Amino acid sequence: MTTKKPFLFDLTLKELQEIITGWGQQKFRAVQVWNRAYRNLASSFDEMPDVPRKLREKLKEEMNFSHITPRVDLLSSDGWTRKILFDLEGTGQVETVLMGYDKRRTACISTQAGCGLGCTFCATGQGGLQRNITSGEIVEQAIFFNRALKKNDDKLTNLVFMGMGEPFANYKQVMKAVDTLTDPEGYAFGARRITISTVGIVPMIEKFTEENSQVNLAVSLHAATDKLRETMLPINKKYPIDELMKACRDYIAKTNRRVSFEWALIDGVNDTPEQAKELAGRLKGMLCHVNFIPLNPTKGFAGEESKLKRISAFRETLNRAGITNTLRVRRGIDINAGCGQLRQENTAKA
Ligand code: SAH
Ligand code: SF4
Image (cartoon, rainbow, N blue to C red; front, side):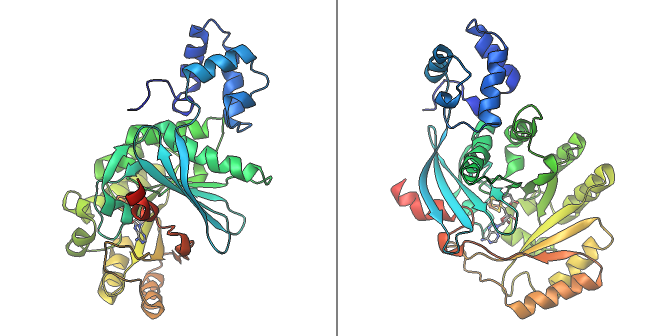
């Protein structure tokens, strides 16, 4: 059972003020708590020295400070990738990954515990949906890793909503989390440094377009024909590629922002010259970028990562069509850093 107590990271500043003034306290006390949580990155109500002790005690009694508890905490052999499987308050688990190569410190955070959309190659999809998570449970993942970085005088520079779950299947909580994380009076994370990745839920892309948000949009395409995409991403039966591309074009026209397309390269499946040609045809002239990543092998899917020669030929077709693209390096393979994999490994213990 989820506890009825309010959870600090779920609250807006206004909601926190309402609770605290309801206890007969002055409004500015809420701002103190807010600043300690989001600016000083306190790890408990006790680490809020300017908040009077009596109020801290009341907060500890009446409010939850944390809803995520590390169950498994792994560091890759190169030391640059850390992955944590968190137990959530009540039920469910989420995985969060911190990648620290170059100057970037990117947290890959989850937006649902599991996912119900069943993409065949995805470990999260193979495990199904446990539950939607709250905005605070999304926010706390970022704060947790930033606290750890702060110990080394470092900080988070990028946030990608590419962990477990489909952000647009939990739209309200995800957008509330974005609002909290970017609040100029609080954590003040730059919206341009946040990326939301969607499998392509068309009405939600349309809704997101209306927000005119500075947050980046990534779309998991993975195949350029309905026939193939359907076999990999079941959601394609509901929202076929033509509709998806229309929503993307409308987004670009309305916001003047670029869309990133994600493409996990699977040997002999979606790395063929035919798929490359189809993709180039669909994307030509569009304000977009393609991110390729070799498939991360998972237990429930027989496919393998593409061979380098195939990848080069595929990319060359896009280059010739003037479509910018990047091949991402997989990180943290030794710690099952592909999302959903750690839960898969640990469900026996769950
Ligand atoms: N549900 C959202 C965001 C989470 S998945 C989405 O699907 O976009 C984040 C990205 O990881 C997606 O592009 C997804 O297709 C990709 N992905 C999932 N499993 C993968 C695997 N085994 N290898 C490579 N990429 C994978
Ligand atoms: Fe869900 Fe994204 Fe995995 Fe598909 S790829 S099952 S939408 S998390």
